[in-house]
Image (cartoon, rainbow, N blue to C red; front, side):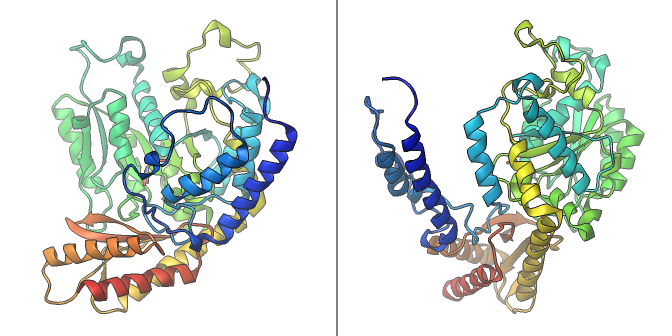
Length: 478
Ligand code: PLP
């Protein structure tokens, strides 16, 4: 036995898989949004050891439907309103099939010139769509967490006098303590990046936020000043456009001014919120980013791109290259001084050919088509917020800058502790019902429901269903 499955098998089972995909996307209501599996269910339904003999692909696909799908929480469901709602789209799904077919490792220009050059073109299209000026260098990574870690590595490398690339950080008493600043509402990926780089969790300074959960520039300036007096070295600040709990927008222009004055690298985390800048009337959310050093946005969050696809933009890519470029003999190429070899800008050698889906999605929808869809999500979120506002016993817990609504059930004559319990009950009841899914956060230490809209197939009826289910659950819980 040798070789791959036959062409006939590819056509027959490929068609069956495509049929399944089409039905799945057409009839999401057949699945509970949140998987009803209990811990261990899926493993128990699968053989503990692999088959010695190959099995017909048709059987494997049947088991996919019977055994795997029940353990899926349907992120691609139009009534998935949890975390940040995301979705894949038809051009993205087709692009992923082609990507798997080509199986490119986009590491050197030579290992597929089109993968490198398409990444340059697609990230530059995205730059223009976001309204960023010329001169930004774009690279795709798997996640915003990775993009932010790379940005922090670049911030550290921007201090070549520390010689960390060559000498590391351990056992060097002459090395100052490095400090990174971000708001108390920033995503945990900033701390994880600092962990990975050996900066240490206690050196990620959580700057206070204002009443609308935005970083306070005066508090940032004060934190930097305190550190300077103590002999610590401020190296980076991460501002967020669209924080995870409430989608608040840090005041980037004022933060950028402080960073420039203090020579601190400014990275902007627009993982979720950044892509709304594609919509002309929301372009302002990236005000001030022209004075930052790096920006991350995630097409895999709110740009209908199947996971994974994060885009990191840098003003001085040579600093990131200095941090990571390492070219062993077997990777030397003749044209390396003329081309971009993306392996030079990160930890990975082999890299996914993500540019194909980004390019196909931008072409298939067009910039106007993408903007229209995102604008509709904002409209739906604002409408939901209006329903909450107009209903006694319910209240909004944060402003609604784009498509995330933070709210809670707050009947009169109940304590905050009662309200915490009620809202938690409501959330579990709604999610267990299977028609819609939403998640929560804590604001001012109070249990808060979050409804995030971002799926390309979400319509008003799905949002209305969520509101109906929430009110039913509240009536039962009260
Ligand atoms: N930054 C923000 C503001 C986020 O909300 C998230 C995830 O929700 C991330 C970063 C991390 O994204 P990823 O899963 O791409 O690492």
